[in-house]
Image (cartoon, rainbow, N blue to C red; front, side, top):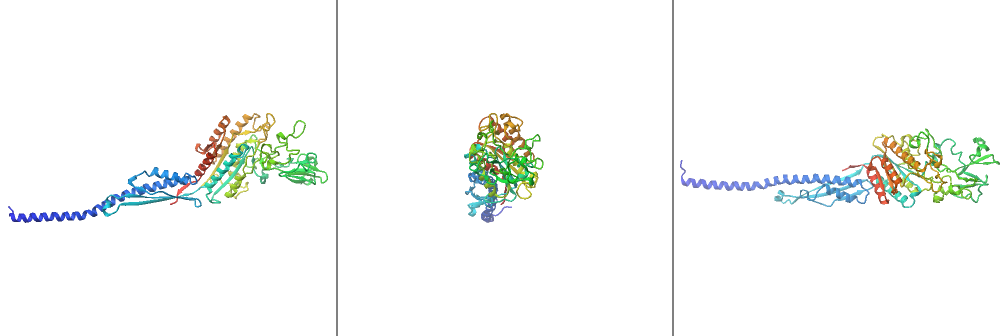
Amino acid sequence: MRVPPRLARTLEAFRRSERGAAAVFLAVMAVPLVAFTGMAVDTGRAYLVKARLGQSIDAAALAGGRVFFEPTRDGDVEMFFRANFPDNYMSAQVSPLSIVGDPAAGTLTVEASASVPATFLQVLGVEQITVSSRSVVERADRGLELVLVMDNTGSMKGSRISDMKTAARELLQILYGERETVPNFWVGLVPYTAAVNIGRANASWLAEGALAGLAYEFPESEVDDNDCDGTNVTWDNGHDACAIGAAVELDAGDGVNEAVCSGIGVWDDGSDSCLVADGWKGCVEARWGPDGRDQTDDPPSVEPFEPYYWERWFDSDGDTDSRYNSYLPGDVNESEWTNTNSNDGLGPNLGCGPAITPLSASRSVVEAAIGEMDSWHRGGTTTNLGAVWGWRVVSPRWRGLWSTEAGLPLDYDAPLMDKAVVILTDGDNNLYNGHAPSGDTDYSGYQRLSAGRLGTTNRSTARTRLNDRTLATCNAMKAEGIVIYAITFEVANNSSGDAIRDVFRACATTPGHYFDSYDGSGLATAFRTIGAQLSNLRIAE
């Protein structure tokens, strides 16, 4: 049917009018549609940025926590953050990192924000979306029994002993923070030379009667009261005799007669008593017998110890010879007790350094012991004896023997507990021969080389035997789960130096637990690295 022209014009006008209304309707609806679409897109981008920001902040905080006390800590935090959050990621602009450490609480807080430019939301006047992230790392240390086995031999004199003390204190700073004690954390110290000092209070670990046979006193025929003057030296007017140590009188009631006294002291006819002096400082000899107990943690109940006693030397005419440790006549001043005369010291305790500090929870106790360390001269270096006494400090077989807290050392498999030993030397194992008779050596934990207690009287072979014993002791400790950190410090670049490096490298729990430090700075870095490895971290917030 044909539509009349007038009606057609009317219908066309209406159609045109409807199209305009629809356009207006669509225009009005487009604004919220774009906003909703833009919100989804821009919010999604912001979510991805926030997730990446959080991951990067966590990684940076953990990296900073591991080097909490390093001067490069904040730089490491920045580096780890940038490595995980690339520049212009999602076109985000990141604020400067906030890095705040709290040594007292043991926490490190890292936070930042990122601004993501809006795209679709700009139609609503929103130019950017800001997201933020914060991470708090807390040092959640496992329980730990830690022993520092430190070389105190004469070659450590000067900057070496000073650098070692400084590095050891830095280690304590990392592990203690600003605290005096840390729950389930104990530290011990084993200074060693050619022997180890167990402490005079532990005389009960010695073989029965071992001290009674040591003649630390001298009659008027050898020394008068003018010569008897020095550290730990006194003149006894009642007996006209000089004693190194505190004088003790023994008589028939103690089972001592004149014949017995001839081997242990000075007999006084007036009182029918024997003057014996207790001048033993605390060092002991190695248990050198065929059972190999110089390499085990067997307690003294299995085999007791013999006291370290450097006898005075007599020449072929029966006169005392000061070159090889006479300390009489006129030499009674027992300077080796205080380590004042270097290689010229004399006396029965020559070469005997400070005593072991058993496991202690107190930071101040350990720091005081570190302060007492010094370079003790003569004798040589027997790292194996330092290592085995380090083992005995943390071995549960020695529980109740050390004057320490009840229940220590703990069992090897105690829950959430670790045992670690740090062993340091500045040179190869050796028996010093600079002040010894031809073909022999100074006195040591194995006595003089001529005694054959290492199965040889050859000095080079003896060095090899000491190296073998060091490694055997380390392997036995590792078999019990003890973590060993081994440090060689300014060791010479020669064959014997290379040999001790090989021993220490094999002694360490893994290659990453061995450090070869060539100066004080390297040593400090080694100790800080050890501290970081011993400090376990977790995300607290």
